[in-house]
Length: 277
Image (cartoon, rainbow, N blue to C red; front, side):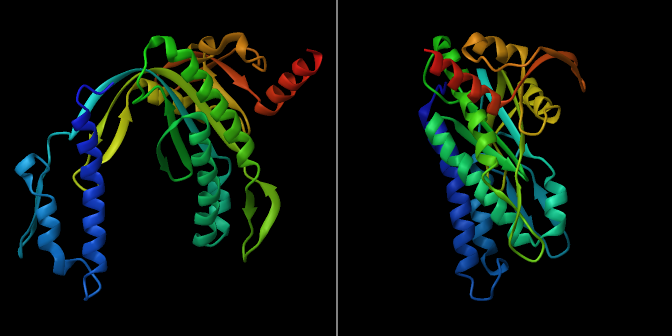
């Protein structure tokens, strides 16, 4: 995938170096803030290597923007998994910030563990959304695509189940009997990826494939996984829990053929087949 391994390692190193140095600048500043260490921050962001520069003036703030990405490439046949928490805004509105963060920590740490189990790459969390992939930054060829799709689907199914093990916090403390539910959307296709950002450079993905996966999630149902026909056809009869094909209207993409999967029913079907054998 990467034509130059040094580019890959250096891109991530820039991100870590920037964060660590900024954190150290903050912690070591005896006056409780970053201004006394502005020289260090400016040094980190010098544009000698096209990282851009932030210049402070007593009259005004001037910004010399970075115009070149730290790293970029195209990736083919990437399986994208998008999830978000059903009713998150309602839950977060009624409880303390620490309860919201504890809840997110609980569910996302479970998803992080699943990434290790299924060999899935976590990309990022955005609010209550969790984004991860297979067949991105992996060494392999097209023959491994079905395996990547299988791993992605197993990851998604386990994510739905694990979410139900996290209880919803109550105002004033404690937990209700209600547990979390997530919606999941999946798609497979080509995308662009790279490292961008002048502050805390970040690995990111973009393209129609990412947008389609997001639309699959937005039109999914609580506790269900909606996948595009493209992804469904990679799995085929290896998954016996598919619902009927549904054609849905997707914003900016027209009518799209999709399939809905209930992970709980899927596991019941698998157990039933195993018992017959």
